[in-house]
Image 1 (tube, rainbow, N blue to C red):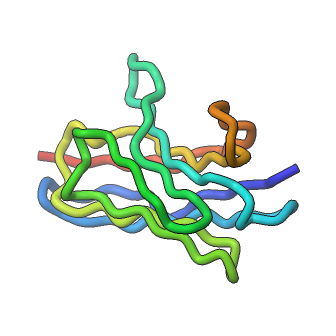
Image 2 (spheres, helix red, strand yellow):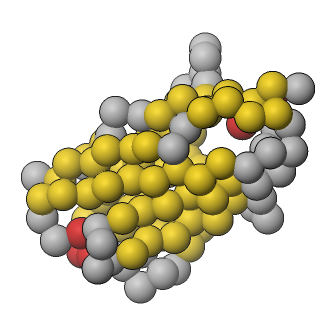
Length: 118
């Protein structure tokens, strides 16, 4: 089992920045591919970004150049730096983990709200 707890959400104005954190506990954190997803009201949950144990990253087109994912395997921490935020970034953001070589994310946090006002 892996337990994930997000923090760092809040409310900002357009163009502002926020940094989300995800604390992981349980099995060896470094073995997992970590990701951030988000779900806006009335919409399906969508992929935002992911990072492998070695630091290989992937981003949704909508956040490329604005968001940066990072991880600290020694501290079991995952981060999402969000810059140049837009109202369409408003959503609940979830931290998730999957085993390397698989496609399904097995473990999810409870989510943290990000609200961007115009």
